[in-house]
Amino acid sequence: MKHDPVDVAIVGGGTAAAAAALTLAGSGYRVAAIAPGNAPGDRIGESLAAAGVDLLTDLGLAEAFAAGPHRPANLRYSAWGSALLAQANPLVPSGGLAYVLDRPAFDRMLRDAIEATGAAIAGTVERALPTGAGWTLQLTGGERLHARFAIDCSGRAAVIARGAGVRRRAARSVAAYAFLRQTGGEVAPTAATLIEAVEDGWWYATLLPDLRLALAFFSDPDRLPRGITRDARAWARMIAGTRSIARWLESADYAIDEPPRLASAATTWLQPVAGEGWAAAGDAAAAFDPLSSHGLTTALWSGRRAAFAAAAMLEGDAGLLSRYAEDIDAAIRSVLAARTSVYSRERRFARAPFWTRRK
Ligand SMILES: Cc1cc2nc3c(=O)[nH]c(=O)nc-3n(C[C@H](O)[C@H](O)[C@H](O)COP(=O)(O)OP(=O)(O)OC[C@H]3O[C@@H](n4cnc5c(N)ncnc54)[C@H](O)[C@@H]3O)c2cc1C
Image (cartoon, rainbow, N blue to C red; front, side, top):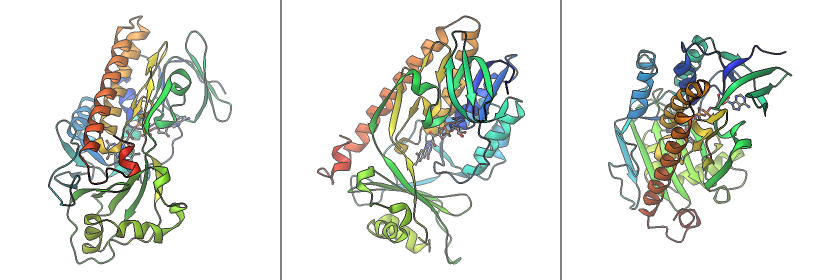
């Protein structure tokens, strides 16, 4: 099946795609936002920076966001550079952290917003072929769509951009994560976020709005026990090796009854992030170390900027697109510098591979 040609194809249905679709809504351009259309489920990544809330307001989502079950991110403790737990954070995004999200509710809000623009197409892009006057996107099931401009918001998959730019990587970090439930009901869990550095990486735990605890361990693939995703006992032993995280789980009766899932947490970026007839936004352009809690905000910011650049490009003005690429490059340099500085503040494990690789 062949879809009607569009001016802009947005590949993806996440945060960057929603920002791009909402920015172009009502612009008069024909827009398609292509994503598999799965129902949003549990997903790790729930800290939203204050700058992200401002961007949601710019996109017209202030009311929908305020109606969500998200909780204010007030308390944040870390044991970084010392075993002592301090009310501080190794890396705070500019303006601070604002909310701990109910991530499925947040993702549903974005999906509904894309659908309300009328641009949503359920599908998966398998290949993107440049045609000289744009792109032909081949979707699973043999469907095809022609677009004059493509914005790649497909996350780390970067389905269009990976063929157009070179992918760089600072480290192969991986996150092992789980969502834990309280077993007893006697202790009210503290609405806090806790970060703890250990020899093989760092832990992160935060109380979700539904009172489950999101727990993640960021490490390198070769520092995780083999078969960890099938071994709840090994996961429990790793947790027992922590100091503050283990105490928190124990004191509030959180059960470790399932093994963790894995997600890539590598810091990777594309060079360039835009070119003739295309731009990458969100994780497709640059996926940062989650220590920065920048990912969602960058996805909102870059999705919006890429959409403005696409609209200008369709009018024959390439200036916004090159400024967009320059600004993303500058943001990547600044995040990489901040990341090195934060990791170098932890000196207790100076010889451990995880830490030496990040110096
Ligand atoms: C472990 C971990 C913890 C994190 N914690 C935080 C945090 O606390 N705070 C924060 O701000 N950020 C965090 N992040 C980062 C944040 O989750 C991402 O930066 C953000 O989700 C990126 O949004 P995106 O829209 O670019 O990509 P995604 O959310 O990955 O969306 C990609 C979209 O593309 C679609 N797609 C993929 N392939 C195709 C295809 N072939 N065809 C069509 N559609 C396709 C997907 O279905 C999806 O809809 C974390 C990341 C990790 C790995």
